[in-house]
Image 1: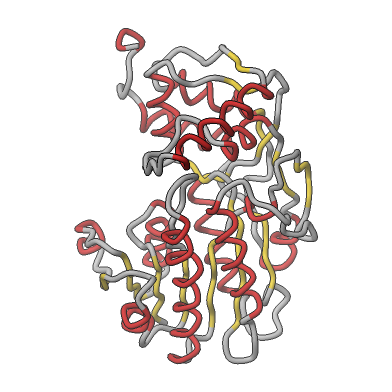
Image 2: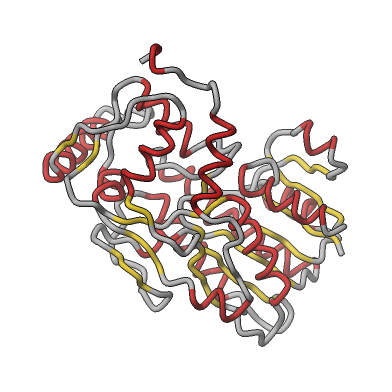
Length: 335
């Protein structure tokens, strides 16, 4: 068995790589840059970009299963860049899998492919894609997800997983951004509602991918389907964030901005950035304002039923691990 992990040097991709190695699986990683720690683990590395079909074909050749985690994430940037990586890149992965006779493709999607700006409470996979997206990232991920599921067939079995807000020690994205803004005094609660959200501890997210691969085959219950993945225990958003913030030695965030004001300001700022062609990410976008002011948690019973997913690391256990990794990182005196 040989597995390819696109984005194997990333947070989720790296966790999948480690779990595969623990099983004794030969692993190849496909990334734009080289990662010395992957060399230390004995992982074969192929460098290239998803937008170049030849690069993707080189990476896929000789593999039995592909975990496609690589994507252009974020809430701001050139539309063409998102489409090149997330849509064309996934087209290239599908074509390479079909040409190389790969049996299984596990695609990492996102719950934001069904987020239309309002509350999503306990919804399941019957929730349709919205007709309008607040930013290009979920739009391109939805297009790519649909392509992956449509490609499911007797020669290539596919499945899409939608892990929500992946976090844990080593997170290079979500938690560092929250802590940086909190340290700078630039973080505000949006609205006063105690909105609930799903989060997914990194080990659980990786485990879900391997479990889906184990069950995936032509005609399997999970073949050609998308699944929400989370810890299965929704948290009150600002209680959760403030727990991490205070564990890092910073004061909790208490100041609030009315939801209507945050959404209005985000729309205005986005307009200004677009008008002047600014590439830097705005301090607030409509998508982020919506995510911070609405509930979004999901029914994960389908993943439990179809491929035996059970979150092994609880929120509380994950927070204890996270606190250990943050120890000494920040001190209140620095604020």
